[in-house]
Length: 444
Ligand code: PFF
Image (cartoon, rainbow, N blue to C red):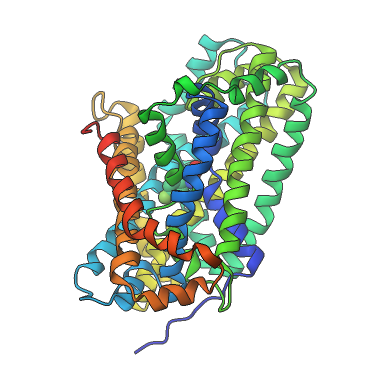
C-alpha cells in the first residue's frame, strides 16, 4: 500500500485563521447585517449569539472531534471511527464532502464578479445612480466570456493553493489574507465612525425590537449560524484532520466564533454608515454591495474609487479564503480514500468543478430559459444538504462513536460542560436541525 503523505499540519494560529477564513465570507457581509437589522436588531443579535454558542459551536466541536480523531477526510474518518458497521458511512461521507465543492462551483462566479467590480471601481466605471448601477450589474452577469475566463482562472488558483498542502498552501494564504481583511474592514470602520450616518447605522442594526422575534426569526438565526460557520459540509472536519496532537479544540472554536461575529458586525455597521450617510436604502443580497454601495462609492470621486477598490478587494479576500476551504473536503477524501497525491486529486476534481461552473454561468445568458441555476443550487445546498450534513455528524458523534474517544478529543477542555455538550449533540441539535430543515423547506 502506498504511504499517504500528510503534507504538513496546521500551526495553532494557522488553524484558527484558516477556519475563521472559511467562516468569514460573503455571507458575513452580504447577508448577516441586513437580516439582523431587519429581524429584531439587538434582540436578533441576542438570539443569534445564543444559537451560535449552543448549536453552532457545539456542532463545530462535533465536526472537529471526527476530523481530529480520524486524521483523514470525512469518508475515511467516519469509516474508521464508527462503532457500528462502516457501510452506510462511506456514501454519507462522500455526500457531505461533495456539498462544499458544489457550493464552490457557484461561489467562484461571485468572486469573478468581485474582480470585475475591483476593476470598475479603479477605473471610475461605477454608476452614479441606482438605475444605471442596476444595468452595470446586469451586464456584469450577462458577460459570459469574462465570467467564464475569470472563474476558470480562480478555479486553477484555488485548486493550486490547496494542492500545495496544508502548511504551504492553505495556512500560508490565510496568514496573509486574514490580517489584511481585518485591517481593511477595521480601517473602513474607523472612517465610517466619522460619518454622520454612523449613529443611524448603529440604530438600524442594534435597536431592540423584541416584537420582531418570531419562530421564523429563531429558525433563520439557527440556519445562519450553520452557514456562517461553514458547518455541515466537512470543512471543519477536514481542517481538523490536519491538527497536531495535543490541540485545544474548544479554545480554537472560541476564537473562530469571535472573529466571525466581529467581522459580521463591523462590516455591517460600516456598510450601513455609508448607506445612511450618502443615500440609498438598506437591502439584502448582492444589491446591497454591487448596486447600493457601488452607487455610493461612485459619488465620492477619487475617495470613492479608493474605497471601492479596497472594499471589493477585502470582500474578494474573504471569499477566496472561504473558497479554498470548500475544495479541501473532497480533495482530502479522495487523497486518503484512493491514496493519490493531493495534486492528482486536485486535477481530477478541478475538471468536473469547472464543468459545473460553466453550466451555472450559462444560465445567466438565458440558455435555460428563466431558470437561474445559481439560486436553485444554492437553495438545495443551504436548505437541504448542509443541514443534512450537520445532522449526520451530530448523530455520528452522539450515537456511533465511542464516548471515550470523544472525551479524549475534547480532553477535559469543556470542564463541567461536557455532559451538556454531549446532550446537545445527541438529542437537542439533531432535533433542532430537523425542525430548521422542515421550516426552511416550508413544510413546517
Ligand atoms: N461561511 C461562508 C460565508 O459566511 O460566506 C460561506 C460558506 C462556506 C458556507 C462553506 C457554506 C460552506 F460550506
